[in-house]
Image 1 (cartoon, helix red, strand yellow):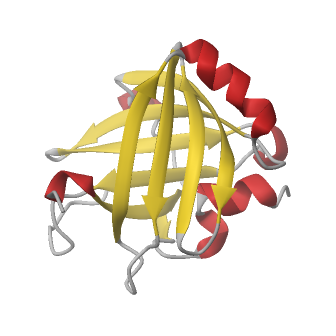
Image 2 (tube, rainbow, N blue to C red):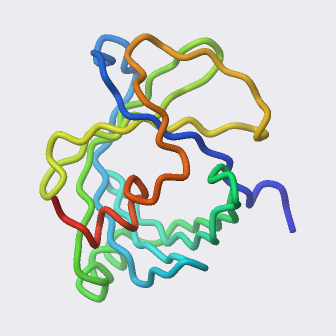
Length: 155
């Protein structure tokens, strides 16, 4: 197994204004073709690019899991969306650098309007990082903040 296929991620609710620090943003629409405790498979459209992603189960700490992501033609991704399980994730992703890291802040629309979650991908589970003032409660490992759960549980 290749270390590049391990996703190590921490998640936080956002409590403050991060917008002045955004360096880039993109629109993301995604849906799940398959979702179980052991594995999820999603189709994603990020601006004008399609992706197919397979993720394994999260480890006991909720930080790490296998992830395989492949670019696909955006037309294929659009055609796969109707094949997905009910529930669509619609969000804007904002890239916010802070102290040698880049937080990905997702502002949800549609069924989860108002939800804002920051994610930080790390090189190891023990990697330290500074938290900006706008970062709120950590929700790493909490099922109700996984995109696959949100897709099938509209508010």
